[in-house]
Image 1 (cartoon, rainbow, N blue to C red):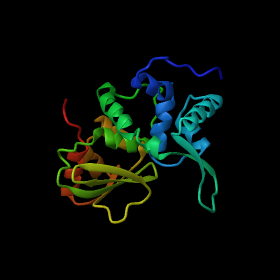
Image 2 (image 1 turned 135 degrees about the horizontal axis):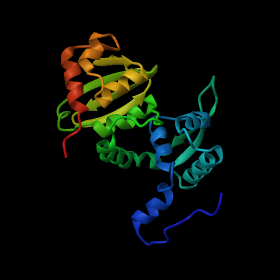
Image 3 (image 1 turned 180 degrees about the vertical axis):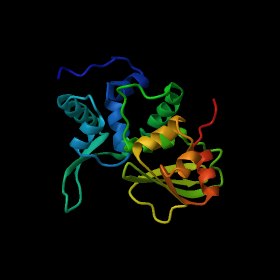
Length: 218
């Protein structure tokens, strides 16, 4: 790879873009916001990135103090990448950009693909803090076999990998059917009635969750 480019401007925005403005960089951050990822996981998620380019982007993020190498706990002990504390401060920026991009989403284009791990950022992009005011709830998802959950507490949202303890609602679906509901191609009520989507929890919790993750109209 050649010498890293810079805008060479004495401006905090330009300095930030020197680090995170390269192609693929913020998508790597998006993936790592869900939790630690192996190099192989990132390659599979970021379809189209070359191995050399991924290695270069990770090296740049490590040099900037945003990403670090770790070893997963035994028995796997696999080398992985995770965001540092400073790297995690990019979460609101990524969520805001994802929220801004909601208006640009229509039906997926022919070559588009989607990963259930991206639902962490999608939930934050669609989160409606007004609807979540005064609410304390845990919503669990198992999309395409990938378990994760959202904890809502008085207008704030946090997401986690893994199985939620005692969730108020658990929604299970294939990644294809879940995406069809998100796109609006498939009605959620009809998907549940037909068995394409499984829900454990009350109808009231389902309705509240739908409102919490319906973004405010700008």
